[in-house]
Length: 208
Image 1 (cartoon, helix red, strand yellow):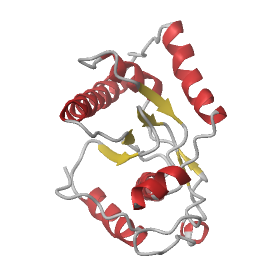
Image 2 (cartoon, helix red, strand yellow; image 1 turned 60 degrees about the vertical axis):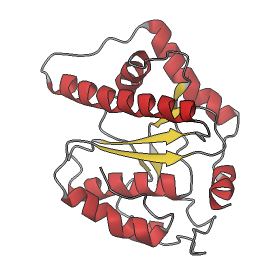
Image 3 (cartoon, helix red, strand yellow; image 1 turned 30 degrees about the vertical axis):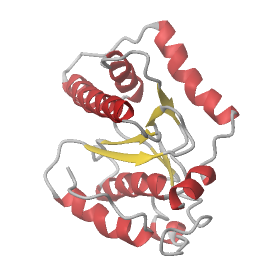
Image 4 (tube, one colour; image 1 turned 45 degrees about the vertical axis):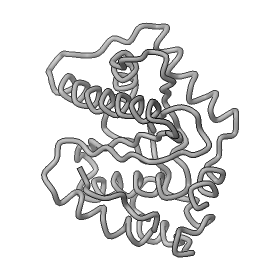
């Protein structure tokens, strides 16, 4: 676990990502605030572009993405079976009323930036290199109960990532997802994009 919150700065993220990956690890789970959401999301992908729209806490916009990552796909995905992780995450919660969803919108601010940076770092080491990286977005947690729920969500996510990764390494052990779960999983991301949940709102709130 990283000992301190990472500064909301593009240069800070650029500096810390190689250091994170230089440490021994099995899985990297990034966690960030999505101030405009009321639910938790497993981010299924990360985008390379759009980081030149909103300045960080230093007033800097990141305009070098295409130059730095010209040889990296515009959209990066982790090596996890996200569908399996989401199912395990949801069913592993102590409180099944907690709202946890898959998402295809990690944002165009520092959350999306560190997620893409982590995945791109591994991609540059080799296209076939495993990318055991995930991003968990959390909503505001204003009360002690909300914080306890957030801890439960994070622990369940970690457990789901470990179990899913181990199962994927077991030869011949393919996870069968119930049809109703599959429909719910696929529908969440589609509905979210229809709602137009763009991260400019989160960024503005995080800076205030």
